[in-house]
Image 1 (tube, rainbow, N blue to C red):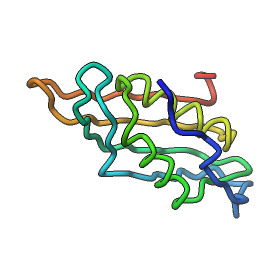
Image 2: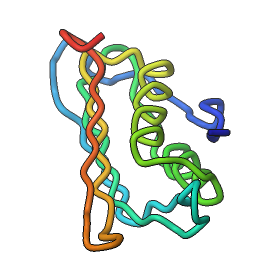
Image 3: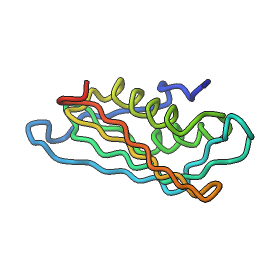
Image 4: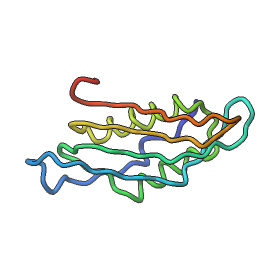
Length: 120
């Protein structure tokens, strides 16, 4: 998979690094391509994390996710790559990325990848 570059992702200083609080971002219009058929795959992507020193800037997250639009990759690869890239730029206390992929051939799929605490 030739995934979008994590260089697209921008961060800013966490305004309350002394507190554990959850940040949840949901992208309802995620698309990528099936690597076998080239057909589009549609998903809702949820990024939930407890920030440490940095938070992700939303416009950069949107652009990063949109860059998958022309990438052929299996669901599992997409979600794990998003998790790895966000973990690399944020170094969060906890991170969970979930992809809820639409029905294809009568089957829907939900893929979840985690980073932090016991999942490193």
